[in-house]
Amino acid sequence: MRSRYTAFAIGNIDYLAETLSSEARKDFDKTDAENTAGNAKWQGLEVRAVTGGGEQDETGTVEFVAHFTLGGQRHAHHELAAFEREDGRWVYTTGQINPKEAPREVVKIGRNAPCPCGSGKKYKKCCGA
Image 1 (cartoon, rainbow, N blue to C red):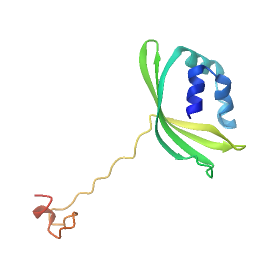
Image 2: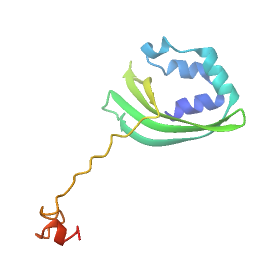
Image 3: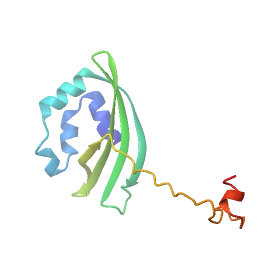
């Protein structure tokens, strides 16, 4: 991921194309990528989460935020990018823009239920008071 960000920052569009999966390369627009890379002033890369992608893995994901300025305005590109090995090399396959976390589930505790703290008291007489 860092190498692809660097390629955007220095305008190495050929490297960006080379590090796409064969399937993703079909939709790659070199002119659009050149315009984006050339007009943006790249400010930094924030890697938020990585899953898989180790030596024994065949797939992996990277959640990242790329910060840049375009037309005098600050922007952030937040993506969950998927990678896989193709001929022994990691390549970008797909990405989900502005990924959302799974909603939190809250378990409601009844007033007369045992307190979850383990005191042995009813919830209403312990932590629910």
